[in-house]
Image 1: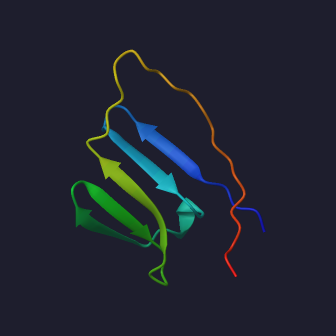
Image 2 (image 1 turned 120 degrees about the vertical axis):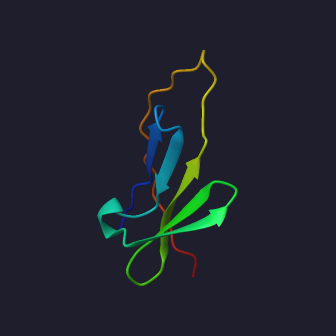
Length: 74
């Protein structure tokens, strides 16, 4: 099964959020320190993270969508 990595940059809130699974599965957020928040599903699996205080340089304005296939290790 193919999965999509979803990246969301919020320039106003100065955050970047990365999901390895469907964001709708989010149940719990756990701050680990240093401005990193782990996003977990109801089984406590990490499905993403958010980085606080993330700011791009003023002269950079990237617009992109990243999609990749994730393979499970056996």
